[in-house]
Length: 181
Image (cartoon, rainbow, N blue to C red):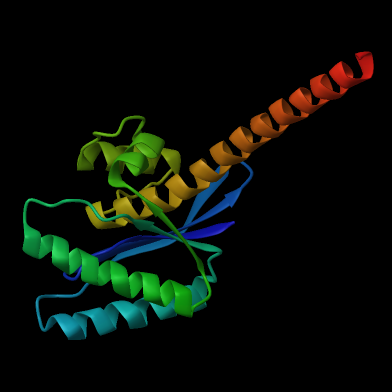
């Protein structure tokens, strides 16, 4: 599985591609797109174009995106929402499955608790992916989003397997009860 994680923004956008084979995760590529502070519409077009290029180069199976969160600065929340919209549209246009995770879910999956700070996330991502170089904050957030999706897929498969086994056991008990009557 190949996952493209995106930490959306209109000034900086982090991105990271992780490959997963079984329980092993490897960083394929990552970086930070510096968009500057010019006209918002122009920056959003740049986000669209860069995402199209990243998806064409890496051919991800899934794009993992951070869910909206409430910000102290409403203007910042609006701008992130605009960037998220572009990312979501680019994902749909490229035919790439979209997965969304809250910041707390990403922190819990990667660092072990939902209140990890930026530095703790950088350390956790670096360890998890055995990185030699230290990623920038936005890049680390994007890699964490991709890793979160991979980790959650494994967890979801285990839960589904346990539920299927429980349903099978209930059906077997039910059939045994009917045969006795």
